[in-house]
Image (cartoon, rainbow, N blue to C red; front, side, top):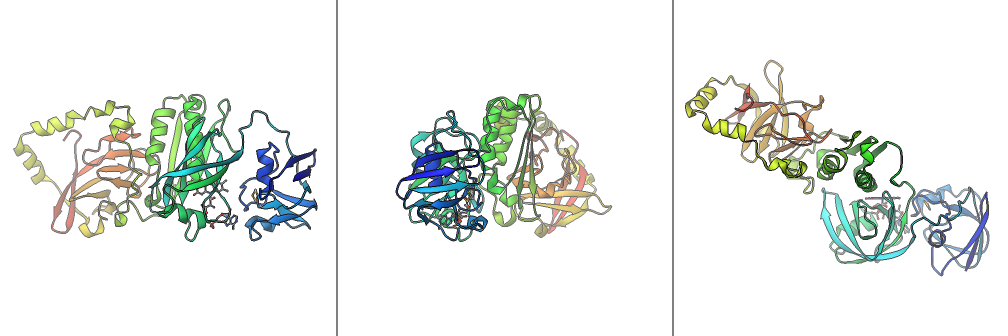
Length: 439
Ligand SMILES: Cc1cc2nc3c(=O)[nH]c(=O)nc-3n(C[C@H](O)[C@H](O)[C@H](O)COP(=O)(O)OP(=O)(O)OC[C@H]3O[C@@H](n4cnc5c(N)ncnc54)[C@H](O)[C@@H]3O)c2cc1C
Ligand code: FES
């Protein structure tokens, strides 16, 4: 069947197969008809039927509400029953010979890994490699689920044999719930793409600003990787604002930290990463729900292995100290009640105000308690809103990290943490003097 399109600037035509979505047929044939989501929600692909018969794939599509004029329909949701004559509102650009080929693809869900309680990393091994631009997405369909959903690629490779996605589980959602079920691993899925115009190409002479909430970080990770590899941050600034609801929802902290340290950090302009919480509470340790993949880089990893050199000074000094001196120091400790053990979440953090108004953060790691300064040494950010994993404390704003046992900076951190003496007396956590460096 043939579709004739009249746009504001020109006319064009293309073939559409039986059961093929009109938009997808156009994109496959390099006809650049207007679209955004390609999945029925935004209304950008609406067109007016002048002649012929179409079949509505999803009459309840949210994007239908933008079809107000007589005969308007969504090209991404409708198929042709006959030859068609249609009109689209704007201009349709000429085909770009350099554009990536857009087509139907297939693949297998090769891995699903939990990143948080409701976000998973999903890998799809393609049956045939494809090429895409950093920032693009695929329309994804699964067996037995009506319609397709858009998911942005996290990775960047050319050609790509594996597509990496980050998927947030939507309660009651058809495809996202399926991806979280035991049906997904090993299942065959269909894809259409690559799609989307919000892409990065080396040569872009601009700063990059990424603002993402939750799984919306996906396509930006691809852009940041591509730009970092292309040396973009040597000349231009990059800023990432990553919004999550609570520390429990934070993921990709390690990946963002790696990106900044290894790929972007060497540049002149460099990159800034800021994670922002929408609400307090639910910090790591709250209910033991530490995001499994939110593990952050150890000093060695973040500094290309050089960090393997353990800070011997502090450790050796401590070992060489006369045991009596240590005892005396402890005996002389002026203690103040900070809080009760029950107030500190298991493997979590609690800000305490002591007598006299001084604030500290008390951290619990296994059977041990530690006390450190209340605010990040970088900026005035409350460290109690950060994340504690084992003995590694992460500030959620710029992902600075420390070992709370020593206060030693790790990963991106550029300054140590002040520590305080801690003594547990029954149920009470008593905090004493600031620990002198090297002690
Ligand atoms: C460009 C783009 C990129 C995106 N990238 C990501 C990402 O990287 N990670 C992420 O988690 N989410 C992403 N999303 C959101 C994602 O596409 C889904 O909306 C979300 O996962 C919920 O899907 P669901 O199947 O769980 O929910 P559902 O409520 O079942 O479906 C949501 C969407 O599926 C389609 N749909 C539902 N029913 C039908 C039907 N009967 N016929 C046709 N279509 C139907 C519609 O597009 C609908 O809005 C992106 C969306 C877009 C538009
Ligand atoms: S492109 Fe968004 S509704 Fe069709």
